[in-house]
Image 1 (tube, rainbow, N blue to C red):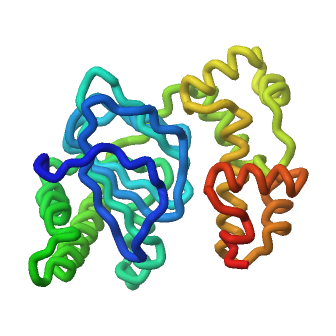
Image 2: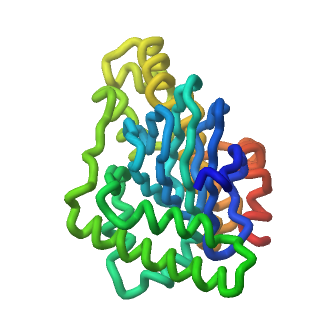
Length: 276
């Protein structure tokens, strides 16, 4: 794999309608902000020192570990700067994956909230990922068909692994307080939420909560609530809701604020995202 490795590309939007695969190796990794996207991600960790945060759950990775990240899950890696960081990242269009796994319980078994990490070193999965990365975008005759065949084999192996459940890692929350706060935000982000209100609810200093939240999650409470609201609005837009309706249903008090935040995070307007 090392021969075709590239440095990190910050884009979080797919260019194709089926799948894309990247082999990245960064001698010194830039900081990656908390983010989400509308496709499925399969992330295979090769080297470095990384903690991976997914919806408030922190995973410490070992080389050969696999992360499965669902559409709209907020996530970010925290990478030790003194070591080279290498991984393979596979993006799969949500509708494409649903069609390819139709008639199975693949999505329910493999992409369960809170169960993102799998140990795969004793399976065929690392070799399938290596071959898929080599075939993807290749010029040899039949490369695209060969790549799709490898992808389907990979999905079948993941389903068997998840069904056996022997190599699934338990979720680990680094702070019970932040776990409770995140759960509360997840239930009430469409309502008015402030740092003062959260501190009072959980009987803690707002300064301590602010520091611990940013340390654990990687963003401020305000930013996290904003991302959850945008996450929900984007989903509603994809289901045919109007921008104004999606804004109100997601907890934004004013459309202008929603519009600015949506453009800043996604690089497009709510109307453009809705196809209007």
